[in-house]
Length: 130
Image 1: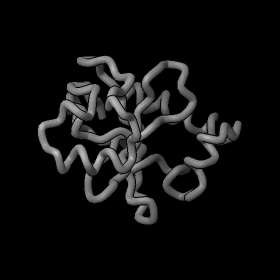
Image 2: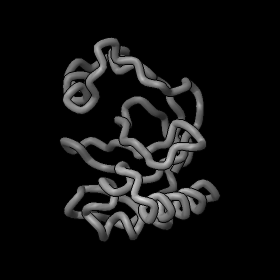
Image 3: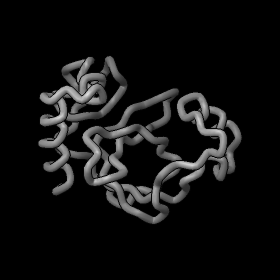
Image 4: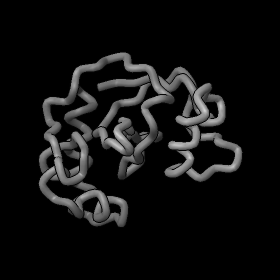
């Protein structure tokens, strides 16, 4: 799945209820995010927060873990779901197998666990080629 950034500042969203919902998870006084407008990003997973999708993305080539961002900031350019994704009911997400079956995977990834980083790198490479 691929998306393009259309809005890189949450305060530019027209719906105040959407802005309020997003502000529960993103705490930036100026609302500015580090996305390049019109740049395409590969989606490495989707998590649902308050029944709204958030895309797991890497902003840079050398990012070792993805971060979730609200779907309202993006336009879908390729809506095909990754063949590597599985439903994780406990996490309300679509992510790759190792992540879906291990509730501590993302925490370990963010904490730079070498095994989790290697697993993500492997799946990232596969998803980048889809």
